[in-house]
Length: 169
Length: 169
DNA sequence: GGAAATTACTTTAAGCTTAAAATAATTCAA
DNA sequence: TTGAATTATTTTAAGCTTAAAGTAATTTCC
Image (tube, rainbow over all chains, first blue to last red; front, side, top):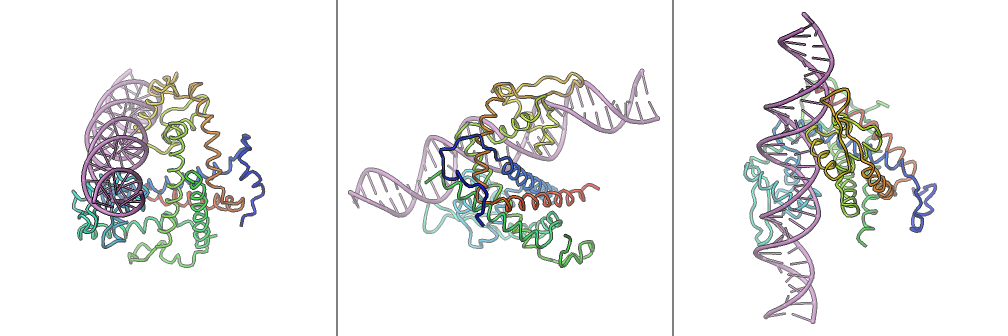
């Protein structure tokens, strides 16, 4: 790796010339189209089949992997959404009986959120079907495609994170 | 292509066994993570740098490619968002002076939406910088990576669309 | 020509999402 | 140990988003 043809002014911030990056833009738009397309379909099926929204499903998915519960902050980081967003989401799922909150024993600011037995049962039923939908949506990719795509997306994720670092330090 | 190892019951709908598809699920989550990550960063920069939202930027991007304007329906299809969504988005951009609407000469139901000169100027300034951000975020991928990723995402898009067809016909 | 279907758009209600400000509890440090 | 900084969460205001229902114009087709 790292054999880019022209990384010349990667560091040379002096160069502010128009310098076109159409290809990267097209790549980004295609990535976005794929994820919007699939996300929309999953959202639609979750609603039609189980009358649940994608954010609620995602939240329950996180909690299903954490039998002892998680704090709102942990959830917020994992799900990459704001804290305030989570407050409302959890509220609604507590009201509907899927989740329960209890104040942390060691930190009175924090609360542990977890699935109720009913919530877990309902989630697992949905998750089983959901997994099938995803397999179906990606069905046109063979094993090698999937492996390659996985690797390239991992690389993309690292690339993006690195570029975002620059903002802070 | 099409050399999947075990496509045995692809057609055999009789098989309703648990049959796991963890790999596809992991692939989907990674794709989603990438796009969420990058989208979030772009959203943040657009706000910090230009005080504009991503949906507004996307809408202006569509119109910049259509000098004669587009109808709301066309925009809705292109952007993959609902009609109602667009009504509000356009309203706000007309109020801020970026867009103008005029009733279609041939169809009194429809209206052509287009960028005002000010809107276009502002968009192009933003777009130039935006292109640089994307190049930066994808900077860790070499030419071959980009080409491969592009191809695999195209294949993914086709795969998803085909799977979605099943819903209708 | 005129009823029925379709198409373009808007409105509504509900929920999602964010940034920023506020509250409260904990930790750090002089 | 106490004041300052940090951390966990909630609230607020604004905007985004959708599905569904409604309005109005056009097209279809008998």
